Image (tube, rainbow, N blue to C red; front, side, top):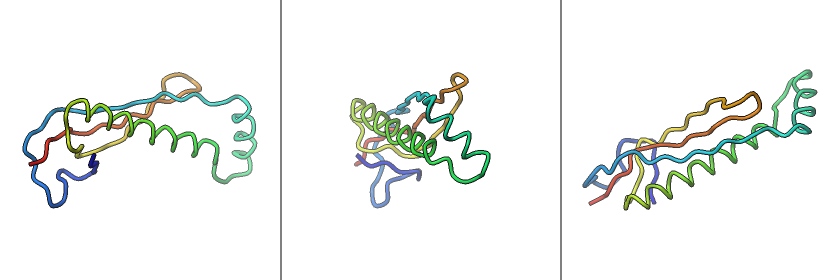
Length: 104
């Protein structure tokens, strides 16, 4: 399964557009993690625990998008984008989406 942020797959021609493929996940922060990250926030620096949480969420949403594209009988997903939003005070949604296409 090809995925790209470009409008086409290099070296390939798009035969048919199948629609939007998407995958999402909602992740909640951990109370223990929040305490250590708040302390780190006071002194500055990367909040590695949160960075890891968001990285895992991106990977999972991308994988779910690919699964949906395969179910649509797509060969690739072009124009892949990520979006995030707050769902509740301590959780966030990560959404991956793009255009599922059939290649010639």
